[in-house]
Every structure is written in C-alpha cells, then in structure tokens.
Length: 132
Image (cartoon, rainbow, N blue to C red; front, side):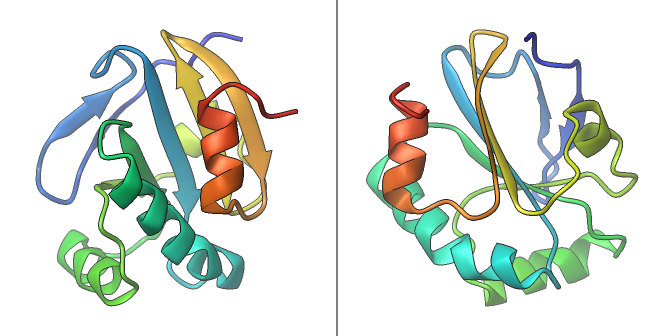
C-alpha cells in the first residue's frame, strides 16, 4: 500500500519525510533495550557500508532525550542516521507491532516488510525486490 505521511527529525537535526528521497528507502524500527534490535545492528551497519547509496534510517521509539539516544546509538555501532519517533506515531502509522521491523518503500509505496531481525543479505534481497 501507500507509504503513510510522516515527518521525523534525525539526531543530527535533519528532517526526513516520505518525500525526502526518490527510489528505495529503508526504515528500521527499533529501540535501544530490545535484544533482537541490538543483535541486528551490525548487519544493518554492514549493509549501510556496502550500499551507501540506499537511504537507510533507524527509527527509534525510545522515550529518552536525543543526546542520550545519540550516545547509545554510537555505542551500539550504528553508522546510519537515526530518526527519533519518541511518540511512536510513525511506528503506529506503519502498523509496527513487533521490534525490530524493517520497511522498504519505493516511490511512495511499501514494497516489503520484515518483522524480526534482518541480515545484510535478507535486507539486500528486500531492497532488490526479491523478498518473499
């Protein structure tokens, strides 16, 4: 279906919404104290390193101050931008009920959703449009 309208601010202060990028965008919904979320971070980081051309955002639903979230994100090894969804409104709009959940959208339409952990390979498959 269509991507719900959203607007979030990254920890660097950039605003990102559903129209920020053309083409494929990856949103990974997570929070800092979620063990499977932490477990998949190295895979997301490796994917981001290998595919810097694919916009990948970690969407955190943590209810903590931005500077604390930024410090924890760095400590956890996150090398991609983190968007702060403190009220969980965007997670709710995307129907996220389990963490982590990764959503790939393309030109304004949701192409793929994966509940639970991804690997760099499964994420590559989702982005390339071969996920089932």
